[in-house]
Length: 60
Image (tube, rainbow, N blue to C red):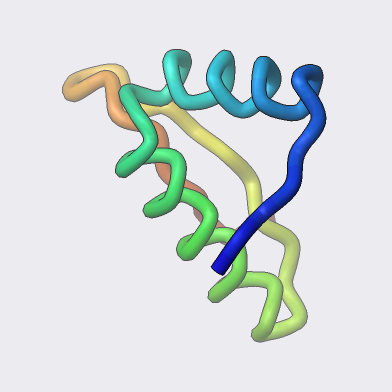
């Protein structure tokens, strides 16, 4: 599969990946957000203060 992105999109993706801990983490977060949205709920991004990892939760 080929994905064509602009240099700006590539830079934004790189920045996001750096902030969350890498591309693997970015993909994990994307999967979490998608799973919540498929249930018709709103996802909220939070950072665990103990581990420093980001995760999506259902916004209440």
